[in-house]
Image (cartoon, rainbow, N blue to C red):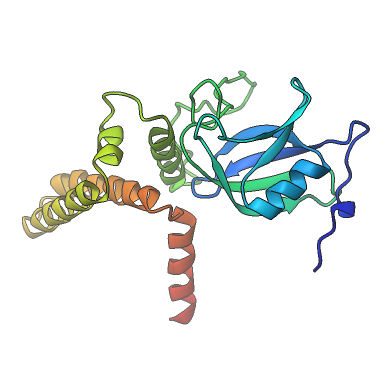
Amino acid sequence: MTFSIDQIKFDAHGLVPAIVQDAVSKEVLMLAYMNSESLQRTIQTGDTWFWSRSRGELWNKGATSGHTQKVKSLRYDCDGDTLLVLVEQVGPACHNGTYTCFTENVPVEGAAQESAPAAEGNRFAILGELEAVIASRDAERPEGAYTTYLFEKGVDKILKKVGEETAEVIIAAKNKDNDELRYEASDLIFHLMVLLRNNKLPLDDIMKELANRHVKK
């Protein structure tokens, strides 16, 4: 299908909202606006360009901060009046220095609190939550955090920890100690997810690979 700018419905001010999402963690990072020119620049350069309503000018995300966004996918909704931009985010997306701009919670009656355990109906929800936390640590690099330490040391350190935790899992299993196995397996999964984030490989891709293997069998 051939795309044309004419397929996008800009508002009376010539703007269209653009939701920016981390292509790896799927966390929603920010909402900005594009006009025809910034959308064209985004398509042509592969980097996000927006229109600043407050300054009345084009701006290239990360041009001054270094917190760039490399576009991995650009979509528009069924009405053509909203864009969804999946990006590879470098550093925090928010000008406040946070990974995402959406950091404030509004209490809603009947809604589950973020701090609550994952619902039993979705027993793997914690993996998605953990992936988002690891992505946040990667972007913000809070001082003193263990995950920050791993990212700062780089892939060799992360691989060393994956190897160490793998060995610990083997030992626990050989010892038939399920309490220790549970603990060490959790450590292994965590460090493996840090490795996936470091290599910009979404957990979704692992799930798809497993699903494909299941179909083949």
